[in-house]
Amino acid sequence: MSGKLVVVSNRIPTGDTPSGGLVVALHGALEQSGGLWVGAHPDTAGPGDTGLTEIDRGSYTRLAFHLSEAEYDSYYLGFANSVLWPLCHGRADLVELERSYEEGYMAVNRRVARLLADKIEPDDTVWVHDYHFLPLAGELRKLGVSARIGYFLHIPFPPLSALSTLPSPDDFADWLASYNLIGLQTRRDTARCLEMFRSDPRAEFMTDGTVKFQDRVVSVRSFPIGIEVDRFAEAAATPTDAADLGADMGEQLVIGVDRLDYSKGLPNRFRAFGEYLDRKPEDAPRASLLQVAPPTRERVAAYRAIRAELEEIAGRLNGAHSELDWTPIRYIHHAVDRDLLAVLYRRAEACLVTSLADGMNLVAKEYVAAQDPEDPGVLILSRFAGAGEDMTEALLVNPYDVSEMAEAIATALSMPLEERKRRHAACLRVVRDSDVSGWAQRFVDCLRNCVPTLAYDGLP
Ligand code: ADP
Ligand code: G6P
Image 1 (cartoon, rainbow, N blue to C red):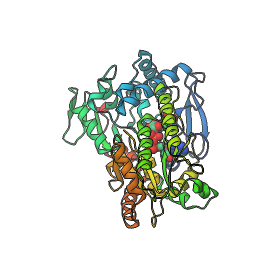
Image 2 (image 1 turned 135 degrees about the vertical axis):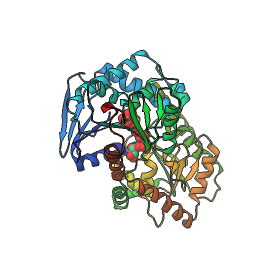
Image 3 (image 1 turned 180 degrees about the vertical axis):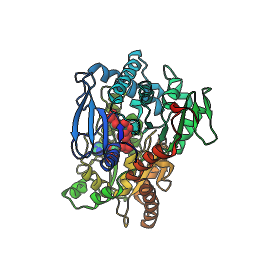
Image 4 (image 1 turned 45 degrees about the vertical axis):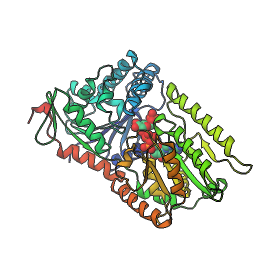
């Protein structure tokens, strides 16, 4: 057996019952194997460089680094969420290029590498997550860390053309090439990553499919992330007072659950629901849209703008369609407990996932897992969410086409039982195949066993 597993991600779980896809997945993997999880301290704008603080110790150790207010602004709000996030989600128009962002991002990556380096033994396995830490492996290598280091990008891999938006476009491939294994959500992301290396004169493809990049060798594969299927299915089927929640929401319920992010296609989703209401026959059951969307990253201007836009659309549609005893769009601005969420998913006849770009989208998988297989609801899923690549029996839609989405809502809400069951069974197979425990295991096994030995020991 190899040494310990060391996981690095910006967000880490706090408390005993972590929630959220990435956090739940890695929590499970570490609970089984033991090890170390390092991430940003939840109290942002702390005192800055004070080393690593232990925030919890159970079957594995959690250590947090503190960000100063300036680092939070430049590394997290700045380079991560005002440059890389919009760039990877096809919104180059929202990219804010400030020199201080890139400097802050590199400085935090260097500092985290310094804090980590002496905690890593050569036979450990290091697994770095997401766009906050692209340069981390390179920084660890500079400090002499020779352990295997893998990387998983949870968000879409940017098309080659978008990379030119970066202040130093050549860095992206260089950062990634310092990992031994790059994991991506979908085959489309893998193709984009390979296209980046193919077009880079510093890279060369080896006969075994790995990429030789100057003095390094890296493998690229897709590992579609999933959810804890049985846990979700059980929570959804557990009777609770919350089952009454949907009672005053109309005869049919359509649900949407997202962070309030411009990549989720919320304005068009609301418009599509409005168009559905405009066109629906008089005698069709009364349907409501329940949208749960807590604000996120609010200090970034684009996130404040989406909130204002959405409230304006919801207000207009409710003004036009509400009746004394019914409001068609319910918009909840806060997070909902996960067990309650599972019950609401099961109560809903349809779920709208309309991302304009999305790495995977776990809500789509949660909705499918939560359904009663004998009377399931219908998933309406954007073609641009990673989940759409394999869940082809969902009602796939173009999130830019409001009328197509309005038609999909009508189709979903009147779909015969047999068709609902058939589509649901096919989607559930995909959800089960990507169950999150297997996902983490597959990545770690691959990193430990099937990627070539380190280039730092000499190229094969
Ligand atoms: P993203 O990672 O971009 O936020 P995903 O759909 O992949 O999108 O994952 C979101 C996760 O956060 C899901 O597990 C979902 O249940 C959870 N989540 C999103 N919004 C809420 C909310 N309002 N209340 C509770 N959980 C939420
Ligand atoms: C996405 C990202 C994660 C991030 C999460 C919540 O899922 O891929 O890295 O943690 O959104 O965003 P936040 O900025 O609140 O951590």
